[in-house]
Image (cartoon, rainbow, N blue to C red):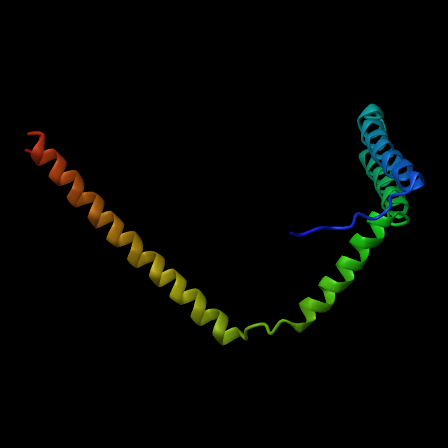
Length: 125
């Protein structure tokens, strides 16, 4: 049986998370409420609110785990061996060729089935 130990979540973390959501909703509401102000200023204000929310979330346990996951993911992406240009072009052309062949086969199958149904139902000319 798989048992997981849940981490103790502090009340302060919960308060920060709830306040982050409330702050983000308030920022979006303010973006639309102040529609008479120029768009660039509203976008900048929304970005400031979003950065504040991200900064606040990074101080919580959940935010720290997400940040460490992002750093580990970045390390894993560096380990990937990416194909060179020749391999990429060859694979792309092979995919296009196979899609074309399958498309033609399905078109022929559909045409013969349509012809057969018309013949069986007496609608063939």
